[in-house]
Image (cartoon, rainbow, N blue to C red; front, side, top):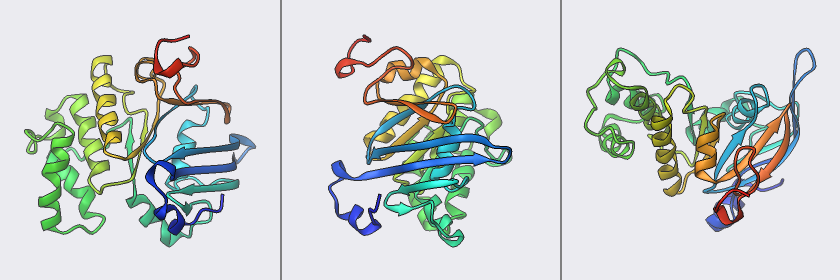
Length: 253
């Protein structure tokens, strides 16, 4: 993959490649193979589920995209930037363009909803005026516009995850990564979170969701990447978790 940032920016959105991996492997100390010769492309604006058993390589893949992990071999491009060859001083700029949501919400317990989200803006250098202008818009998007003064302990698990999503979105990332975002939630709340992620995707953001949740994958009928022992074993444009390809996103075959 030789795409440059400039050439990506001039391509139509429908043709842009948001993420490209070519022959990527990750070998941890002790000869533990986290990923093995993975090649894939994800277009700008796609919604993709990443599935597989624990230890299959899902989280490693997401961490590579924000340079939390480095590949042992291969190349990785995110929004036209060569992440695999990125210098340390370039990493903060990359991470401002990528929002990340985790299973553990990671909220500051002594700060309100508003303060938790504002903190994510301030650490990237946003001023008070920008925070005041942007925050109400993001809280409305995640359905928390009526609870800006609530503390995390006063919120349900689903509401706390919505705060975490708001925090990931507040700097307008073009790419949103969600690592087991429904892992601590009940089924009904989980569906609400996934619907929110679909809404975010509809605004133009590329969304990747790593999950064990069979129900949300089956219900969504979006592209599925399945990993097993670090190997990409399935890539279906519109699939279900272990139930075969869906014809035109219709009924399971």
